[in-house]
Length: 215
Image: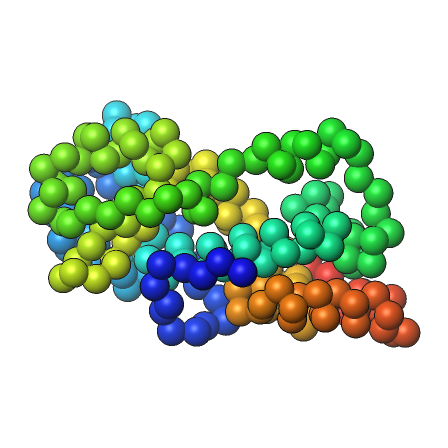
């Protein structure tokens, strides 16, 4: 399984429970160093240009955590388990057991879905980011993932607002798997395969499903 560019401290969740603050391009340019510090403390920011959402800034560790989740989901796909196609978390147990059938259209749609968080890493220091803010935001809006460096360290990941929303939707799936005993962001492919096998053969799976469903 592919690893992130840098390994942060292991944690059970990296998703911030704070709604993103809104900030205009000019204010961001003027206060970039302070904003980077706020984001590093777990306060995501959405960058606006004439009320148009250009980018969302999340702390680097959160972006890395989502990379790990995505590679875990890819491992599940290799087992023909497609959690993203669940019409609700109540379907996830059926999907893990292979009892939910998928149409070719559903599978092709999932394959076409963009995953900016897994894109190539582009890095920029705060000084250069301030000087070239318009170009940076334009690149993010087109789907490129940028990491802002602070003090020579990865500090902030910038992604498209649509990508941020997609990751937020995935969070309920991550929570369901955690409740069912699998921490997606911290599991290897072998551990995921073992968990799926054990889930499928567990005699009390039906009873466990009701307790682990997330509304």
